[in-house]
View 1 (cartoon, rainbow, N blue to C red):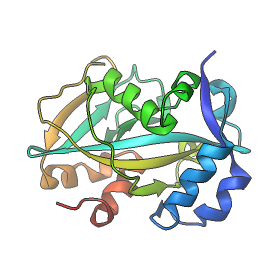
View 2 (view 1 turned 90 degrees about the vertical axis):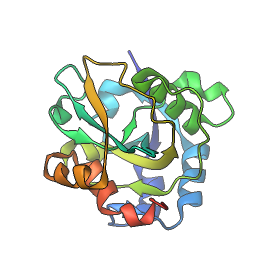
View 3 (view 1 turned 180 degrees about the vertical axis):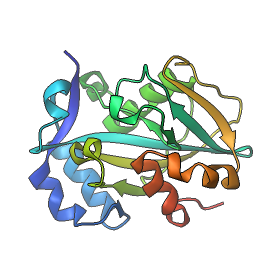
View 4 (view 1 turned 180 degrees about the horizontal axis):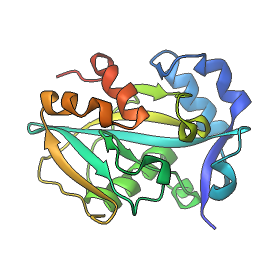
Length: 195
């Protein structure tokens, strides 16, 4: 049974307010996560309102544009099948606990598994996704990390997703087909894209 990082919802709510994309108080939110996280069975956590699962959500940026993926039917989360995404990431597991920064370690593992990126400089979290519009999002919060990377990457989990570099205009054209976190992140691009 996979165990995933969670934080009691009541400890985060004071910082999350009713906004879908939060840029205020990010250091305090990260501090609450680091000091109060625990691990729960994923099957339970996916429908447990008393917890928020913590998901690092990396937006890959290069000279070639933005890395746009499409989730296929073999993807674990059935509620996201067929949707486009500009963010990559996933759950944080207990084995990341032994590393320097548990959040960055979880993101590093996910990126290595999904697109083979092993080496990157993680900057600060640029925003927190707190989406209540979609069922899957009620039990998660996303920590948005824009990452400048080399454009020579490709999807490794080809049974789960496709991926390609896309211009701003190409991403715009897929907006209506994006999962909700990508819509929120892309809709707030002016707050995290400093190019």
